[in-house]
Image 1 (cartoon, one colour):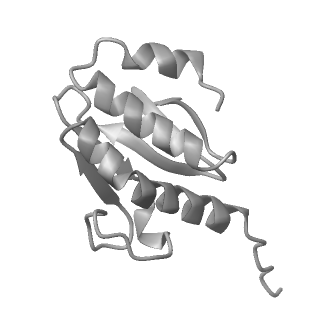
Image 2: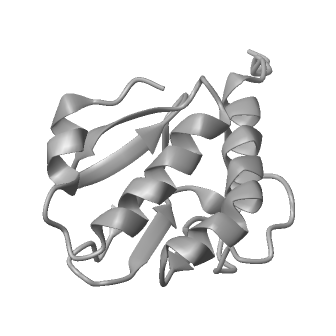
Image 3: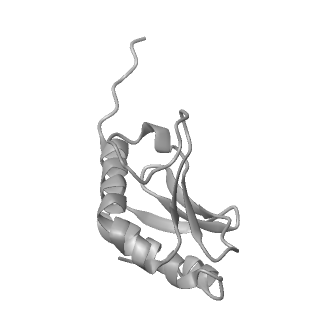
Length: 124
């Protein structure tokens, strides 16, 4: 898992730094197709498009926003939201990240599979 140096610097000194870093570790470790970078003042994970980013990152807890979470196939009990687009996962501590790591990894893989699937051509 190759870490982006700008993203690496972003984590330093955040109130929830250990939680943020553990979420990052789970996401990047789940699938080699997943990458990271910084965008809009936060760390964003991507594979075939923006996948998720940290929001409200100045708090002592972590909120992970799935930019287009509504299109990720599957049922995930800790993914919050019901609309067509955005979903969230929230973590209070590292133990909670560890407890949900398998679920988060499945979300990552589902996204990467979705984004790497062949796209159907529109009829002219």
